[in-house]
Image (cartoon, rainbow, N blue to C red; front, side, top):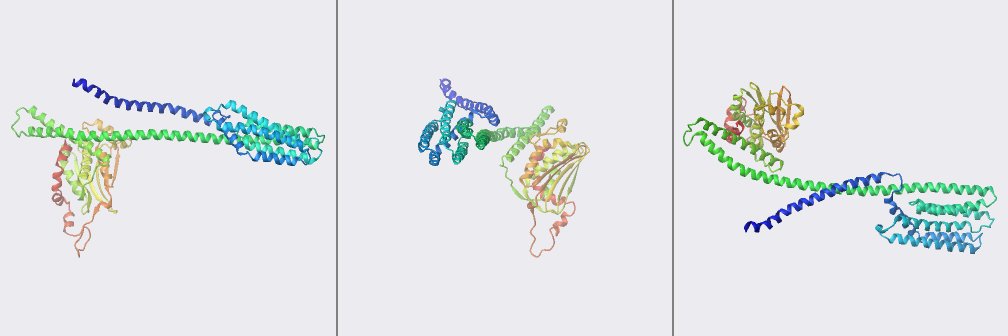
Length: 548
């Protein structure tokens, strides 16, 4: 019953992640489907060979708005022309032409108003294009009627006025209808034909010349209209492309936000995993290390079988190695997450170096490697995390001893410079690192080709941890290496971390004056032993891990 009763609840719990996963898959599928459409639209928009169907509505809408905005000016222009024509033409002809023109204008205005009220999704572009062209043709024929007003008049001013009216009409139609070339043709060709016909009917070469000028003027205005049309097309294309680019940016932002959310979730999961691993692995490891050390030391009694004793030693060494690996992984994770806090105090950098050499002495002697100390005396104390600097020094020394061949030399140097900075340098005469592998060995878990050839293994975390801890102190980390010449790693602490000693009032002398300076003027080993005795005990556990 318990299993049967829990089944629906378990099914609901299992359904949630499946639903979320399905939503992510659907969203990803939509994104992948949208990308080709966006690219296709952009390619279509960037081809400017001819008028594109996707812009016909915008072009017609511009024309319609121009016409609706001239509801007063165009009839007013027609009235002015009518009043002026009464000076050489019968008033009846002029008023008749004005009436016909206003009727044609009303018809065109009616169609434009209807087009403006219809939603874009419901517009039949082909039908409306034909309707507006026919309305413009009727409007153009009515304008052409002005050439018939006062046709029998022999007053030269009448013909000049008709020619001027042609120029005005061509200009107005050019400005209003340049977005749609068929409408321009329908609105201007009838007027030009009427004026040309009027001039040709007059038996005078002067008017024939004016007729040819009218034709040339019409052609010129057509070229101007095509230029304006191309400009409007380019504007619409750029606007549409801008909209598509904005859509692409929004899409990219959505993808970026989703990736960031996943990265944050993965980081949270990593932190939880590391916290769990820290507890779940360290607890049994402590038991393994403790009991194996008791058995190896034969505290509860001797172990008669030597093989079992060797097994205990192997178990203890393996446990130490695994604990060292776990500590390095956790240290690097804390540093990357920005949660590593420095416990700073005033310390001597040369003491740290000397203690680390002493802790690694047995390992160096087992490989026949000579360790040379070059520690400058009289250096001021530095404000730093002792554990972090000790870990840096041990990591660098361990690497140097690992890759230095038998009979080689490792040199550790501590010195200051004129700027007040202090540096710790560890140099070996090992095989070196190829230049193309240096970036790889500086990455987490990165190892060079030489590391795979040696019997001694490693995690590839020593250098990244040392570099990160150095940068946490505001220092510099430098690695120089040359094949068959060795490797030198230098960490430099900034001058701001130097702690100058406070002298008593009336005390004369510089930083190095006094008996303390005399004690440090030699090799300084006695003083380092006194100051570093306590810190050496703190590093015993790490020495065991490093030797392991």
